[in-house]
Amino acid sequence: MNRRRCTIFLGPDVERALADYTRRHRGRFPSVSRAAEHLLARALAGGLDEGVEDLLAPTIVRVVREATRREIQDGVGALVERQSNRLAALLVGSGKDAYRAARIAEVALGHLLADPVRAAQVAEEARLQAGARYRPGSHGDGEARGATPPGRSARPPGERE
Image (cartoon, rainbow, N blue to C red; front, top):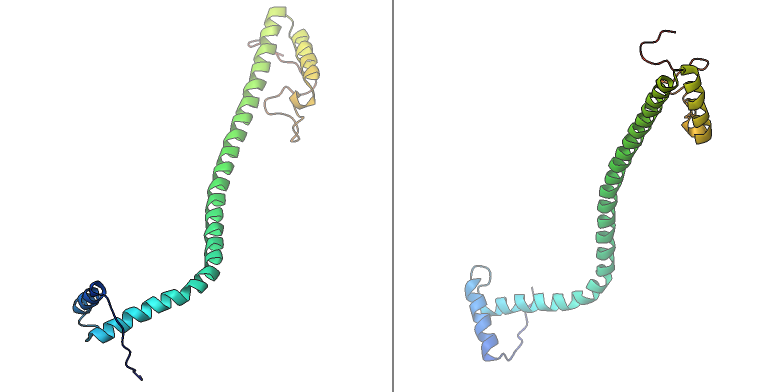
């Protein structure tokens, strides 16, 4: 490597700091000149990289934003899926409870009227007024589970057909 002599004037504080640096890194830099060359090269390289930093910053920001967005999306996606499943389970349970309550009300009405056939007619009228979505078998998979088959009425407990 071709070396040239360069005279640099340093203030006393900088000269002391350079001497201390050379002493601390004696194994790496055998002379003050070599230590000064290393420090000056690092400082100049840092100054030259300022233009490159402006080019890299948008790329780094874009990569970090994309990674952050992906992490949030993955976390939120899993959370939304779990919450949707919980909501679906609650709705199904609520529907089953409502159906059971309607059946119990129909049986109770049958006991009160002492006429199970009339109670079934009243319950069917209520279902018609409620709309198609509340009638057994209207959910797309045939007859609702536990529904009374068509042509048969609900019987109070203990009464035989």
